[in-house]
Amino acid sequence: MFDNLSDRLGGVFDRLRGRGALSEGDVREAMREVRVALLEADVALPVVRRFIDAVTEKAIGADVLKSVTPGQQVVKIVSDELVEMLGGEETEGLILEAKPPVVIMMVGLQGSGKTTTTAKLGKFIKEKHGRKALMASLDVNRPAAQEQLAVLGEQVEVATLPIVQGQQPVDIARRAMDVAKLQSADVLLLDTAGRLHVDEALMAEMKAVAGVSAPTEVLLVVDSLTGQDAVNVAKSFTDEVPLTGVVLTRMDGDARGGAALSMRHVTGKPIKFAGTGEKLDALEQFHPKRVADRILGMGDVVSLVERAASVVKEEEAEALAKRMAKGQFDLNDLRTQLRQMNQMGGLGMLAGMLPGMKKAKAALQQSNMDDKVLVHMDAIIGSMTAKERANPALLNAKRKKRVAAGSGLQVQDVNRLLKMHQEMSRAMKQIRKMGGLKGLAAMFGKGGMDAAMPGLGGPKGGLPPGLPGLPGSKK
Image 1: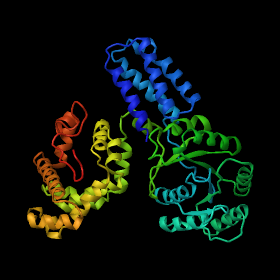
Image 2: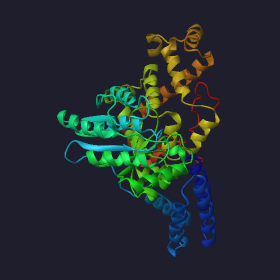
Image 3: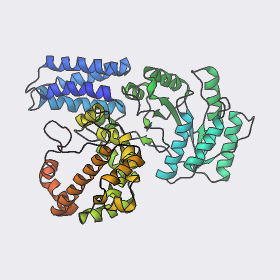
Image 4: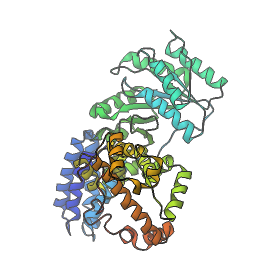
C-alpha cells in the first residue's frame, strides 16, 4: 500500500535533494505539495494540518537551511514526523502478561474482517508467543458466523468454543470464560458481532460483553480500504468503548493508505497489527518506523529478513549453502527459491521492501509481470522428470516441447527459464571463486554492494543489467 503517496512524496524529495541550497520559500512550496499528497491519500485534515505545521517549523530553522545537505535534512524531518504520526519509535504488542485467561475482545463493523483477523491472531499467539488460545464467536446475527470461526479454527489449529444454538452473546461470553479456565487456556479471543453502521444496540451489546469478560485488550478491526470512513468509524468506537489498540485489515490492497496515517491521531491508541493478505498467516505487527521507511521509498529490510526467516526452512538454507559452496545449482534449487519468493509475498512485495528498488517495482508493473510468473515457472519445472531437473543439459528440443505442453506454456517460456537458471548457476560459480559466501560477505564489508556486485543498484536504481527475462514478461 501507500504506492500513490510514496510516488508523490518521492518526486517532491528528489527535487529538494537536487538543489544545493534551500530557501524558506522552497521549503514552504514543497510542504504545500506534501499537504496535497496527504489529502489525496485520504489522510484526515486535522492530521495533515498538524503534520505540515510541525515539519515546516523544524525545516525552516537556520540549522537546516544553512546545513551542507538541506534537502536531506528536510527528508529526515519528514521521516521523523511520519514515525511520530504513526505511533512513535516503539512497537506496541499484545498485553499478555496478566492472569489467564487473558481476554482479547475484537470489535468493529460488519465486513471489516473481524472473524478472519480473530483466527489470524489466534495463530499468531500460538506460534509467536507459544500460548494456548481459545476462540469464541459471539456473533448471533450474521448467518453462519459461528460456523465460519469454527472452520478457521480447524485451519489454524486453534480451539473454538462449541456452538450452542439460541444462546445470546453475553451468555456465550460467560460460557467461554468457564471453558477457557477448564481447558487452562492462556488467551481467550472473543469475536463480537458487528453492524453495517454504529448504533446503540451494537454499543450496548459490546459493553455488556465487556462487563462479564473484563477484557485486557479491546482491539478495533478497521478495513483500511474504506479510507476516510474508517477514520470516522474509529472515532465513533473510541467515544464509546475503552479501546487498547487498532488492527488495520487489507493493508495490501489500499494504494492510498490515509486510514493508517490518521488512525493513531484519531483514536489515541496504537496500531498493533496489519492484515496484509487473505492467507491466515498474513498478519504483521505494525512497526511505525518500518512503515514510514516504506512510504519514503527507503524499503523495509528488517521485515523482509523476518519474513524470510519465517518462510525459509533452516535445513533447506543449509543444504543450499553447501551446494553453493561447491558451485552447484540445479532446477530443484531454483524451484525451492521460487516457492520461497512466492511465500514471502511475491515479486512486487519483495521489490517494495528493498531500498532503492522503487524503479525496479515500477518496471515489473509496466511489463505486466505479476506473481503468476512464479507459478508458471514452477509449472515448467514440475513438468520435467527428476533427471531433467537435476541435469538441465538433457533438455533437447523434443523434451522442451513435452515440458511446454505439460505446463500449458510455450517452448520460449521454457527457454527463458533455462537461461535464467544458467545465469544464476554462473553466479553461484562466481561466488565460489570469490571464496564462497564468507568471501562475498567480506567484499560487502569493504566496498559495499557496488563493489561486490557492480551495477546491481546502478546510478538510476534500476534492475541489474543482464537480469534474464522471466517467462510471461516483456522485460
